[in-house]
Structure formats: C-alpha cells, structure tokens
Length: 140
Image (cartoon, rainbow, N blue to C red):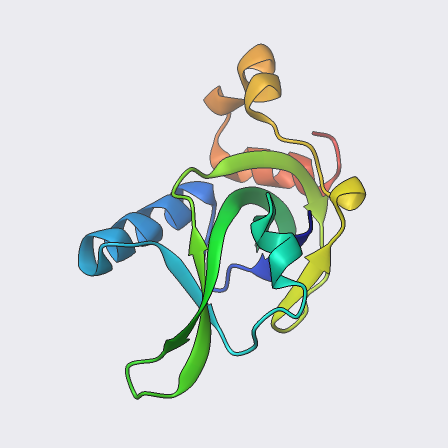
C-alpha cells in the first residue's frame, strides 16, 4: 500500500473541499481528481492507498483512492483520473511545504485519522479557523 499527497489549491478548509466535491459528483456522476502523470506505483496506491489533501499549508484530510484510470480533459488532452471515495476523513494536521503535482507518502509517514479524537475532545465545536491555527502550531 502507498498513499499520495496533493495540494488542494483554492480550498479553504475541509468543509469547502466537501462542497466542491459534492458539486463535482452532481455534475459528473463520479468523484475524480485529474492529474497529468500516471503514478508508476499505481498498483500500490489502489491497493488501499489514500489521497492526503494539503489545505492551506497543512495536511488535514484524506480520501481513499478507488481506482486510477487514463482519461482525457475537455480539450481531449490525455491525463490521469484518480477516482476517489467520497468519504473525507480528517487527519492529525501536519504542516506541509508547497510542492507541485502529487507526491508519494509511505504508510508509516501518514498522519493518523482524527474522527475519534475530534469527538472525544469536542474539537468539532471549535471554529474551523481556530482548528486550522492549532493544527498549524502542532497543538492538535
């Protein structure tokens, strides 16, 4: 198993990511993220891997990658589509420097999921901006 990381360009927070993806599913009937290059280690990624989203400089969420397929953009330019599970799972925030494209992420280096921790500590009651600040400071 192997994961990918990707910057969620133009996305403000996890709720905004959900909104954008919900609209994409309504318009296209499936949830995908297009990228130029096909991962050479795609078999490892599809075997239980996830897309870890970097939002506003912090790795905050992940989605399971269901499939990786060759595709074409609207202008017929070849590309790759990463087919994603619609469930977005918050993860322990990790400050991440900007990069282009996507990067591989080994399972041992992936941040842990947060749903149980959020519920236990009541973090979901904090404003999203405060949650982001605390994660950026590695206090959450």
